[in-house]
Image (tube, rainbow, N blue to C red; front, side, top):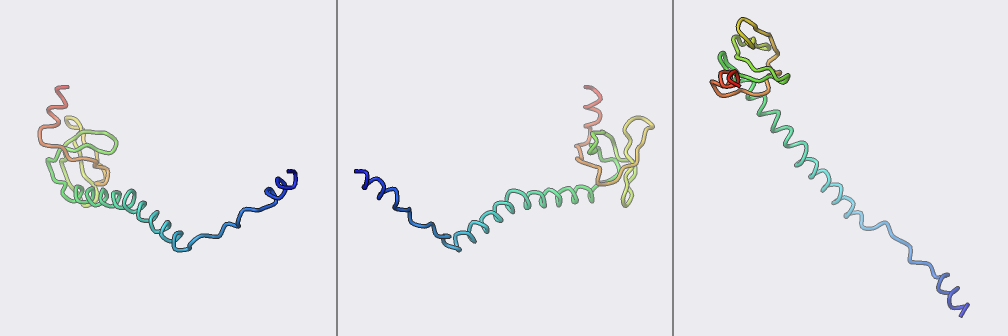
Length: 113
């Protein structure tokens, strides 16, 4: 009995091979595809939409800035816009600081709150 147990334990499992190299390549390509569709593509799409929004800014547009200010654009320059945030209070911001363009009348609706 003792001889059988020691013989069974002495038998080593077959050595593991490195596997198919094509499987590793496919896994790597799959990971790149996942990163592209879940991270890179949506970020690029969002950046294009924001650039389109920034290029379409015009005088009289009601906007929200990245900092959360709500105001109306009073002057549009090549790199900067003037935004009126209160009566006779105007701030100069970079165009990229505009987060959202609101529908007309949003400022009046916000003042009632």
